[in-house]
Length: 77
Image 1: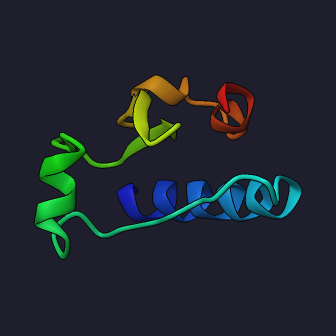
Image 2: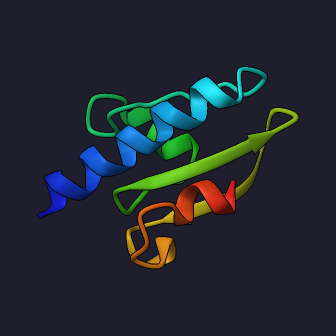
């Protein structure tokens, strides 16, 4: 089920990236990038770090914060 959720989120982020070309969307694998994950304080997967002006502005942590709706992430961004 976790993989299905990640695939759904990935699909929506790809749609958002195409609609918002002024925004940079970057996907990392925390376990392959431990330095960056630690620097961004990523503990729970998935975590979305929303960065503005070179600083973390907000986090969306885990699936619970997405509200169980398919487009909740898009609405939050």
